[in-house]
Length: 130
Image: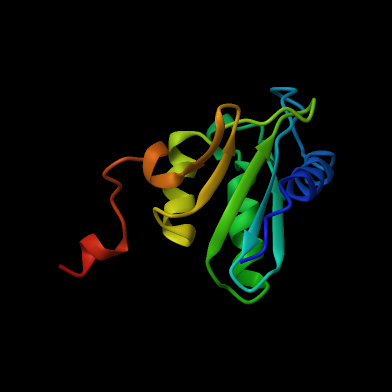
């Protein structure tokens, strides 16, 4: 297995963040992830005047994943408007679990962690087939 270029993922996330639509919070976010087939997908947050309708950057990333052929996410990073690494919110951790599972590796301010540590005892697709 080749080493993951986390710096490249952060650069892609920062590029996505530069296109965020965050006129209300002023808090742009960008994300990037490596897919099991080697592709990199990304996303940015898109706010809405009706605050609850805003889309987190992870929504855009998952949409790009599906639109570009699907697959499983293997490595993920998230950055703020200064390029600092963030952790995804709880809702987005659940979204990432659906498309990456418990072994998805996340870059966090505290180091690289599997999603299983960020979302313990997660509810997932397997629960619906039991």
